[in-house]
Length: 367
Image (cartoon, rainbow, N blue to C red; front, side, top):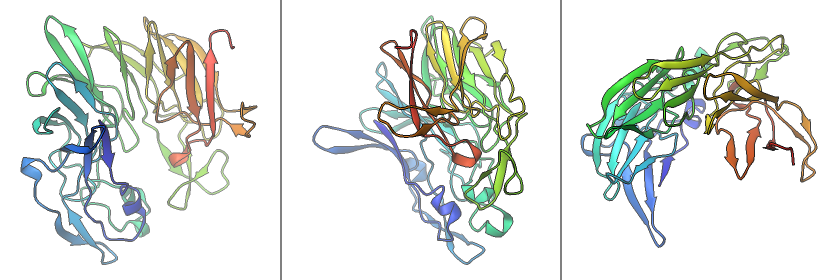
């Protein structure tokens, strides 16, 4: 199983072209053939073809409804033969009823079993963040851009009860009952929300808690050449806010109560530093790993949230293959722990993050 989207969120948002139809989907592959398992948007009530909605400022035809992307891996429930996905927003008006949602599909047929939408009316593409003179096909809804970038985590609560848990860019973590049509069990706000705010990528769980890192990354336009500023795709320089964002939460799986919370240690006087912790979280017994846009990878005690290890990856490296390398921001995928080793990518230049090009490997004894 794998999620699928056509890369038009950025290309449509920047280029002065007609906003064509968009489809988000996931597919099931067999050894000999490709079998279409389920579409995120084209199920019973969303079967209509996209239609002309309005003209853009430059006269290009805009279409809708467009689809919703799936930004994370699906979750398979072998007990009920169900596959769960979380979805992003729509990219044109009107917003689809399956945007910003938890969706449950039959594993064999792809038929939609149930859906729960957490934010209604959310239509957004990156053109909405461009300067006004460049904004040609931003949907009238203009956000709030509360995608789910986190996979739904299926957990056992005991006594025959289960939950699906995922965080959203709204800054809210949700727990739904997969055995009661996605009935809401609890919700907990952990972040401010925003286009790059709230919970960006994946969380992690153990038997008692879900561990959630907060992004809330904020950037401000600044004159080119400002210390710590970086160019953006829109042709202006921006600097990350050193005082907004970050933190790691441990929430009780049964209730959503905060077991502990550890704020980001702070950026100090580093120009262009952000405390945002956007990257996916990794959990092993007793320890939680969370990377940040400041380039630090930190290990937290699962018991109380104390930081037990902290490494700054922003530096030059002598690499195994002889390629010149430098570390940068940690974002997107989280650390991978396997065979007594921890692996992490360092460098993420999207929208103000520090670039880099290195894969780092850590062990307890450094060998």
